[in-house]
Amino acid sequence: MERVHSQVVQDAVMRKLEERGVKLQAVADIVYEMQRHYYPHLQMDTCLQSVIAVLEKRELQHAILVGIELDVLCEKQLLSEPLQTIIAQDEGLFGCDETLALGSVFGYGSIAVTTFGHLDKQKVGIIRQLDTKAGGKVHTFLDDLVCSIAASASSRIAHKLRDQEEAEAAVRGLHLADLPGEANDTSASGVDEVIPMQVADGTETAAS
Ligand code: MG
Image 1 (tube, rainbow, N blue to C red):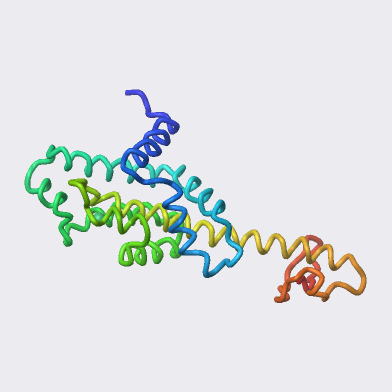
Image 2 (image 1 turned 180 degrees about the horizontal axis):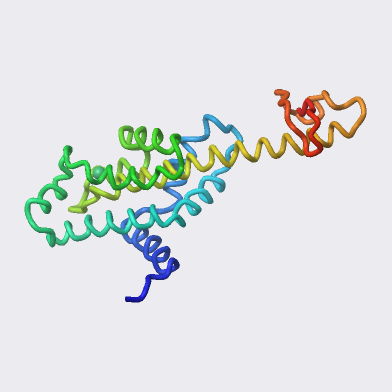
């Protein structure tokens, strides 16, 4: 049997999210809400790019396809009983919707896990809309999947921005160290904290 190409999976994920009314910008709005307290200069575009990046991960893609498929089959009354009724009712003790979605965030570490739990409880933004089950739609799996997309994208931002901050501090540190008398002048770089770091030649410098 022929293998399914990654691009086919990726395209299907984007198409199905669109069909089910999940705009990437709506997920980015949640990510922004989750991370803006930690990064006051956070750009919305950074959040959107992070959402797009996590949607390229196979594990998340597969969870999205499985979950949406079950929601759609349930809407069409194509599942067998008692699963049909359990999913249609979004039975609180079902748990497989959360388990499927949660399983796909582990690659992004503990921030993704805790953010997932927070979003699952607080139902921020579009997650709340999906949870209200308006118009005969079934979103039993989709609301949790949106939690996992947003949680992974949030965690990714937290880690990326830290890397970026450290890289920028390293560059500034090297430049300032090269300039006599300005090595500890934090006002020149606009940075308050002095971060000791190891530079490429093995010496330690007080980078700002
Ligand atoms: Mg659910």
